[in-house]
Length: 338
Image (cartoon, rainbow, N blue to C red; front, side):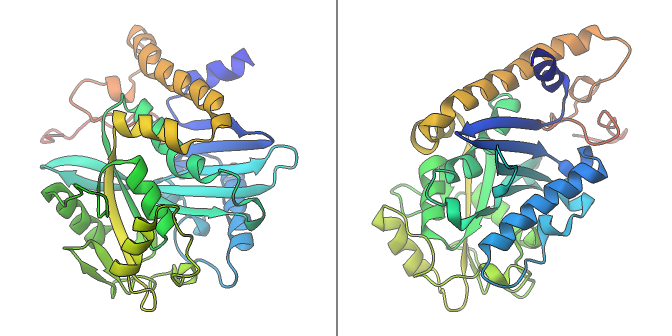
C-alpha cells in the first residue's frame, strides 16, 4: 500500500483512484491520451461509451472523448466512476482544457464538460463528485491559484449547481452577477476557437449580452437536446425560471457560464456539494496533492541529473497535470515572453 502511494506521489502526472462512495471507485486521469498506453486508453474510452449507451435513449454522440482520438484526449481530464465489485462503469465526466488568454497572459479554462450517469444510479449523490472533485484537485495541484471554469448547458439543475459552487459566475440569476470584460473576452475566445469541445456547430449563434448560444445542437451533440420539461429542475425555483426565460428549448439554446474556482468556491464545494461519505477520500486526496506540491519540488531540486518541467530554468508556466508524454516540458523559445 505504501509503495503504491509513493508511486502516485512521485509521479508528476494525474492518475488518482479514490473510494468516494460505498461500493464505488472513482478514477481521475489527466490527459489520458498523453499518458496511457493503447490498452488502458481503449479500456477507459470503452467505459465512457458504456455509460453513454445506458444514458442516451437513441443515437450516438459523434464528438469529443467517444472518438478515442489521442490528441483530443490529451486535452481532457476524465473522471470515471465504476462499481468496485464488478468494475461496471456507471458515470463519468470529461473535463476539457481550453487554451485562452486573459489580460494578455495565457490562461487555461477548465470546461466542466460532458457528464453522464447511468439511469439506475441517479439520485445517489454522484453529481457533486463528477462536477467538482476534479476541479478541486486541479486547484490544489495548482498551488491554490484561482482558475477559470466554463460550462455549457440547458439544464436548470446544472446551471444552479455552477452558480452555487463557483465564484464570479455569469450568467446567473443571483444578485450581483455581472459580466466583466474577462467574462466577455473568454466567451468570445471559446466561441471562436473551441466550439468542438462541447459539440456546437459553426452555424450556431451567440448572444454576447446574455451569454446564450442559440441553435446549439447542430455540431455532434444533437442527442443531448432536451425540452424544458425533460431537463432536470433545480430545487431553487429561480434557476428554473431563469432558464425558462433565457432559453428557447424548441430551437435548442444553451447557456455559456464562466466562473472561477478559488478558496471560497473550494470551501462551498466541500460544505455544500460533496456527499458526506466522500469527505475522507477527498481529505486523503487533498493531503496527497498538497504533499506532491510541497515535497516533490524539494526532491527534484536535489536531483541534479534530470530537469523537471516546472523547475527548469526560465519562466515556464506551471501545469498542475504535469508534463505531457515524453518527459519534461520543452524550454521556451528564445523570443518567448511566456
